[in-house]
Image (tube, rainbow, N blue to C red; front, side):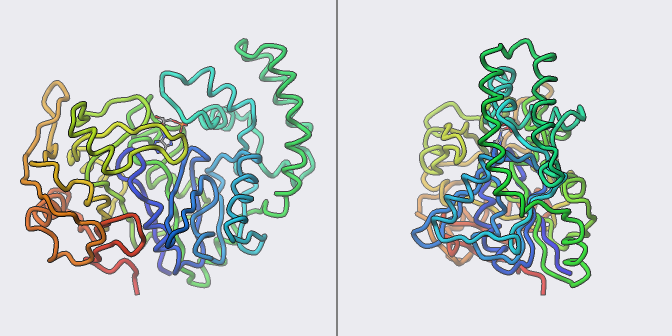
Length: 408
Ligand code: IMP
């Protein structure tokens, strides 16, 4: 049973969408195990651009079953809106190809409101993620199974009564507004009701039938609630551990694929030892079009941080790396990579020679400039994990395959 997992090795936005899309084509089941609409996966098929936030990317390539696992937090309004947009692009949804775990928690309008009020210092995506997970852990959240059980409406009122008691930040007028959101929510969850399932039987059937399974991570390892740069993190387990709690099944993943951007970016606040504040950082932002798919915010850019990535490999046990956006490094001059930190936490760099050539669309490793080959080999040697695939452009065909992606 070939099982694959794709995880962002840095702070998210490593280009997971494209690889997941390539993999998903051969998958029988794709599952999202954490996060919510804070994620944004962009996939380019020819001239058509698809952006998914909540639904697994497998829907785009026509994978036969796509699951939102219990580890996710899902806003009914956002989910339905996303499905409608994808339907307009020709993607079909039915309970035969899409399921939402009844144990997943809901993101409600009140969570988005609280996110805006409480989480400014983190620089969140304001999608209600932190407050929804807070409710989950506090055991005051609303799970999707309440819709199937017919208890959602009562739970909604009970939840807002509790919110009124706990949060002084919400005034009477705002509460009224939140109560008025109920009819639209009721209408929406009714439409989504056929998709709500106990996902365990789906997973155990896929396992017993030796199906190809892909777990699709969102965000990146250093946004993990436990292993990331706390408190400047998201509220879910973005690293490999989240795959198990977020699905309710143990999988001995054949390929644990880490997506590594060939430089570093992060959105929002928090430490970033290799951040560049100069013209080079600006050029990386321009070359890589480093603006968020979810919020449109410009991303902070910096040199590749191998000390950070070494830790990512330890956390996730990667056995295959994808090196993305290499074409964005052309023309930058000598390239620095952080190999350690000093006592004050400042990055210690090694400098490698750069290259001028445009690499966009290159598909042959030997056709890459020698300095680019050296850069890739340096990373691989440092991390002691093979770089199996190098991505050289946004299109799904712009890849250099060095090591088979699929297990036979
Ligand atoms: P939240 O996930 O909206 O609570 O935001 C927490 C932190 O994670 C903020 O710094 C966000 O910018 C960051 N974040 C959340 N989702 C993503 C993502 O998909 N890519 C990159 N950063 C993200």
